[in-house]
Length: 323
Ligand SMILES: [Zn+2]
Image 1: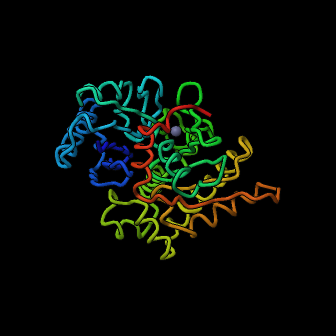
Image 2: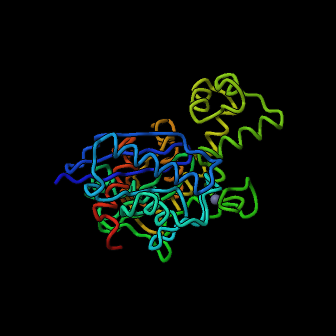
Image 3: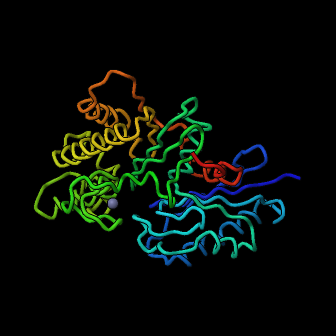
């Protein structure tokens, strides 16, 4: 019997679904914006509804569905499939997501893991991490994170949030407040959503920038407007860029000295800026690294489907065993 798996990638801005057949081909996809205003019940209720729609649209019998893998951008208790908190979807907290979703789907097995870890599994198996025994997958997106693979196995830590290094404190008590509950974590200085908050703060303080016109209003400023303004030499965009480069460089260096893992696979929306961002980040890293041994900064290769593929891999057993 043909067996199917559904992989779901919950992001800070959008949620993506993929139905995979026995050959792990994505035969149907679905994407919708992540509703930051939803309660956990509404949020995962919507996901359950979409899973049912996908199954019906593909003509899949319930018995043929091997399971549903879900990557969430959250601090989770892996064993329990429980979400503690989510920096970019602050209402998604203290919620038994796995059991709730499984119940809504009539007992279909559900596996829940951190979204970066799911993507790390995909990159290790199919992408830029192939051949590296030790690798970090670091999304630079709405949020930032660093999922670690050790000898092919994901490392989760005691409770499940190993790799949430975006919330390591860079400037104690200083800077913008992050969804993690602290001020001055790395994420608060350089993630996609937080850099936009900095830009808006500078504008509120009277700074001039072309980003407002480029984006069609201050509320629409995003990383795309930032990049366009940067290309045009906009001083405020350059300031934002330099801030990101500085903190990303420090963050990568601190990961490198604490773990001595020399393969960083970088994914997420900010990677679309390419060398204009990654080149200076590598230079910032090199300023602190006084050793000649190779350190690889690779761009993720699994593309838009990375999170979905990784979430599906959890169902195929990638979540079993631990580094
Ligand atoms: Zn934080």
